[in-house]
Structures are given as structure tokens and as C-alpha cells.
Length: 379
Image 1 (cartoon, one colour):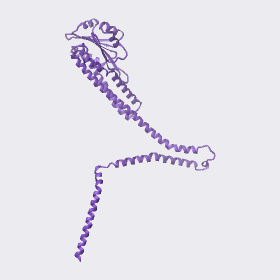
Image 2 (cartoon, one colour):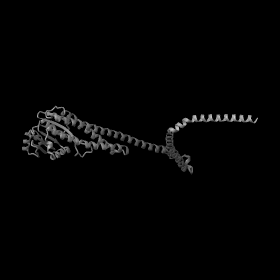
Image 3 (tube, one colour):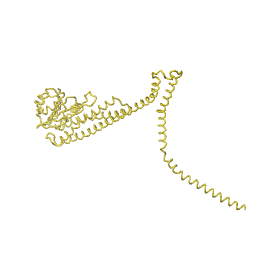
Image 4 (cartoon, one colour):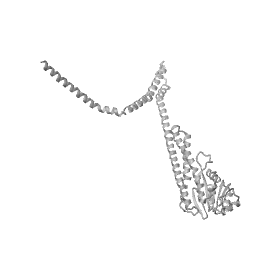
């Protein structure tokens, strides 16, 4: 068990790693703020929380329990007990693991307890050492700063999952395989775990923002309302990643189905080519003594020629002819799409024909009248 403590007195001085006697004195100072962080608790942690810090037994049992605990907030008279979850960046699993953070909130004391290392807690400690004025606030407002850092650490994990989801959607089309399927399932497992553990925290933050507890003042409740809004946004981002994973899985199954259809098509062509050849070979190889071709000198070569001809014809019929027919159909489909000017020209063709015919009739009539006039003059 590792205990790290920070105490900011009313005069602005910051102390760290307090002794047990100094911890008791800091608890009695209602004008200062004491923060105790317990990492990797052991069997002695229960006695410390109960005897030294004076917290309720039920809250201590929930904090030290190894089973999964959903996000919640409970009030035990003189203090509040809060369970939230963050991202466990120390996990070596292929999918995202979450980590539980238990928080005890008293008048001038905040105690955080976690079994795995949380980068958000380390970040808050670094900020406090750099600027001790960050502890010059109420216990509720300091708890908000810790929880805000915990939620900020969730966003990089979601950004990474979003990048992975986009890559898997492309991989499901380009190179679908067992490895891609495993990554898709791991991505879905990660998003489901985040949704089940982190998303319910919005309800706990909602209770803290409604002035329901006397340890969280009206000035502090608005900050927890901001945490609730952030939690809803993170849940929306996580849901979008989960939808992308579902789309990647559907794309993967479609790609596998298309590849299987292509394989079956090739096998069907091969089987169709060799089926008549197998028939001829079976007939030619039957064990009967009265087979006319057995005594024929060129029977073997004739049968081979017939088999080759049948195979070539079958291959031409199944592959070449169908390919040419497909190309011809595609060419006809492309040629059927006429540009607008050609359609207008074709529509204008009857009008041009009528105009040409009318002009020809007019020329014939003019020539006939001219010939008649010339004939009269000659007479």
C-alpha cells in the first residue's frame, strides 16, 4: 500500500507525505484542505480508513471490494462516498481496460483510492506541487478537479479507438482475414466496456449537480454539471466508434462472402471443364474385353483428341464466350447513354427530312415553270 498525502494550510503553505500525527492535525483544521491518495491498498487500508480517517464501514467495503462496482454516490452523514471509473493505461490487454477510483469527501478532506496506477492522479499531483494554490479551495471543488482530470484521460483512448476503427474499416475491404476479425471484436469489446462502466457516471454527476448533498455547495454544483455534459459527449463519441466497428464487421462479412463466391465460381468452372473429361476417361477405362477401341491402333490418341476438344469447347463456352458477352453487354450499355446533342440531333432528323423534301418539290416546280415559259417563247 502506498499512501501519498498533501496538506494546504489556511496560510497557503503546502506539505506533502505527512506523518500519522500530522494527518490527525490536518484533519482537525477546517480552514485547510487535506488530500490523501491510497494506491494498491492492502489489508491495512481498511483499518486506516476506519480508525484514522473515520469513514463508514459500508463505504470502506465498497472501496476495497475487488468485484465490479458501478458508478454511484452515497452520503454517510459527515462524508460522501463516490465511485467513478477511468482508463487503465497500465493494462497489457489488447482491448481497453477500465480502472475504478473511489473518492471520500469530507468537510476539509478528500481521500482517493485506486488499485492501478492512474495517470490522471499523477497529473493532479504534479499540478499541485507546481502550484499549491490549486488546493486553496473547498473539498467539493478539489474533487471536481480530480474527476475532471480523470475524464480528460478518457478522450485520448477514444481518439485511439477511433483511429483503429477507421483503419479496420479499410482493412475489412482490402485484406479481410482472421487478424482483422480479432481486432474488430477487440474494438467492440472495448467500446462495450467503456459504455458499461464510464457512461453511467453521468447519473452520479447529475446527483452532485442538483444541490442534493450539503458537502457540495451551490457554487460547486455547476462544475459537476459540466462533468455531466462532458460525460454525455464522451458517450456519444464512444457510440460512434461502436457503430463504426459494427460497420467494419458487416463489411468484413461481405468481403468474405464475395471472396467465397469468387472461389466457388473458379471451382465450378474447373469442375465443369473436367466433368466431361472424367466421363470419357471413365468409359474408356472400363474393364470390358469387348471394347472396339482396344483393337484400334489410333484409339488412344483419338480419345485424347476428343477429350481435348471437349475441354476446349467447354472452356470457350464457360469462360471466353461469357467474357465476350459480358464485355459486349457493357459496351452496349455504355453506347446507349447518348450525350444530349446526339439526342437532339436524332430528334431533329424528321424535321430535316421534311425540309429537304419540300425544297426538292419546290425546285421541281420552278424548273417545270421555266421550261414551259421557254417553250412558249420558242414558238
